[in-house]
Length: 322
Image (cartoon, rainbow, N blue to C red; front, side):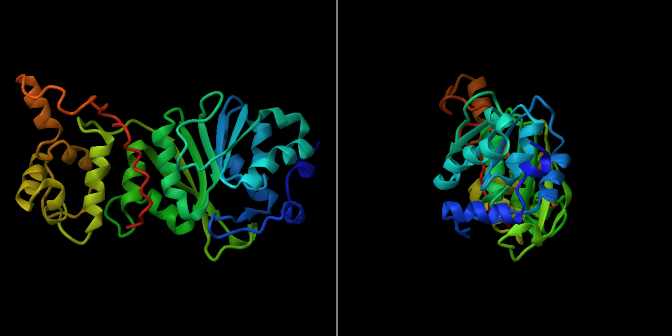
């Protein structure tokens, strides 16, 4: 079956939706891609390898799924809508029968999954629902360490925030937390006309490559707690913004100076490495606990001893766009 015949066009998308009784809802962030050239471009930009296992979140009617299947070993499609989840295997079997065996559909909320069946996924490629895009990306990176790369389509403003560098007004929680996991960059714009229904905003592609977290003896959860505190009151100096986190403004200043960070700076001036350093110096935090353990005082006081690279439960799926 040729590519043109397999991929979905505007008439195909509407016909499938009508057959299933589907009306796109804002609640689930459903905007279906109706342009075959756009899904080809997404796959080409993602540049998957033949051996990749791709996780796709929110496959909808299957536009991107059908474009991914010929290029990779396996696609695990995570779909929260039970009607769409049940229909997707049939759509693939009808339009690309030779590739149907490469598809696995998981009917679930991507924000709640702890894993997926089969081989570990190596890449995330998805047209993400706008209302949960950042939390989904952060949750999957935390939950699925096998993910090495990602290409996601999100609202243009969100894309800008995800890739922002320190020092700008749009730099905030999404920028910093994503940087913990690796490097993100803008990979091109996407217009409104390629969707049904057309959204009220433009979209953008964000490419991501996983890297190592910055050196720190703090857990991911502890680092993200500093990030959240710093941007919850982003107009305040770090000395003031971190007062609650540290117990007092004076304690916050002590921690900041120990981490070689100016207490009068604001969160938007710091990169992820600086936040990772600060997290080590919270009063009663990791360095004080380790010193106590070195002296035989309070060993195992922190329970199971979270891994410094990613303490249990620290998914950090915070979608607030500060």
